[in-house]
Image (tube, rainbow, N blue to C red; front, side, top):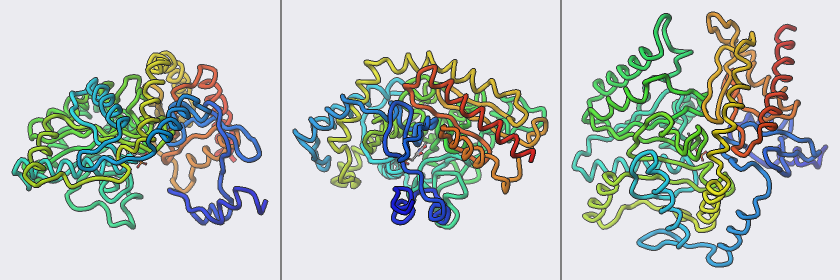
Length: 456
Ligand code: PLP
C-alpha cells in the first residue's frame, strides 16, 4: 500500500544491518505495538519475538507502568543533568552504586562509568585501558585481543574488536593494535578425536602464541563475551575460561567481560561471568540494564584500574573522556527501576525455573536431520543447521538456508535471528512456559516447511 508505514519506511528510513535495495523493493517490517513477548504489525498480525528485539527486551514489549512512572517522575524533577567535572544527577549516583554492588557478584568492581550504547561502552573501555597503561608508565602495553566471531559493536574502536569480516570489510577496520584470537567453537573448529578439554587447551595455546608473537609487554587486554551472541550463540567449551585466564594472568593482561548480552540473568546468573567462572577487571553492559526501555550502557572497573585513572588524571588535571548524555537521569531512572523490578519480581528465579523448559525444547531438535548442533545456557541458545549431520558439512551459503528459514518463521509468527545457518533464540526473560513452548511450536512448523523447500 503506497501510504502504509512499510512503504514510508522504505522511502525515508535507512536501516542498520540491512540490504537497502531489498528494503526499497519489499518495504520494511514496521511494528506498531507490543504486549509481553509479542509485537504487532500495522495489520495487527501477532509475532512472538524470540530474540527480545536485539537480545535486550528482558521484560518484553508491553506497558510497564512502574517504568513509565519512574521516567515521568525524573522528567518532572530533573530531565537532564550531566556528569562532567564532579557533577552528577542524584539518580545516576544511585544507579552507579547499585551496579557496583551487582557487578561484584562476578568480581570486585569499584566504579561505574555510563554510556549510551554497548559500542560506546566498549570504546570507552579501550580508552580506559590505554589511559591506565599510560598511567602505569608502560605506554607500549596498548594492544588489544578480541576473538574471531566476537561481537562488541560497530564504532571504530568496538567495531575493530568485533571479529566478523562484514563489520571490517569496506570500513578499513580493525584499527592497528587490535588482534583476534581463535573462535572457541568446538563443534566447528574441534579436530577429529579431540576432546572438548583438549580443544580448550589448544585455544589457550593459540592465545599464548599470539601474545608471544606480538610481545607480552605490548598486550594490554582481552575483550570477550561470556557467550558469543551475535557470532551465533557460541557457548565456551569446558575448561576454556580457566585456561584462558591463566594465560592472561601470566602476562598481566586485563580481562574485559562484555556482558552486553549475557548480563542481567540471561545465562541463568546475574552475569555471564559468574556462569563461566570469569573474573574480569572491567565489565561492559547495556541492553538488559534498562530492559531496553531507554538507551543506557555502563563500564564497570576494578579498584586497580580506577586507581590508574585516578592517579594519572591527578597528574594531568583530568581524565579527558566524557559524553553529554553519560548517566542521563531519565535513562538512569529507567535502568534503576528496571533493576528494582528484576529483584522484586524475582526474575532470576523465574529464568532458572523456565530455562530447563527452554533447553529441553531446544534439545528436542537434536535428532532432526537438518540440525547439526544444539547449544544453549539459561535463556539463550541456537540450533546450527547443516547439510550433513555426520560430517558437520554446512549448506552452501548461497542457498541462504538460515535466512530463508527465518523468513518462513516470520510468516508463522515468530521472530528469530539467523547467523549464517545458526538460528538464535533469546526470548524475553518474562516468558511463561506456555510462551516458550509456543515459540518452539511456531519454529517447528517453519523448520518443517524449510525441509520441504530444501527437498523441492
Ligand atoms: N557487545 C555485545 C556482546 C553485543 O551483542 C552488542 C550488540 O548487539 C554490542 C556490544 C553493541 O551494543 P550496541 O548495539 O548497543 O552498540
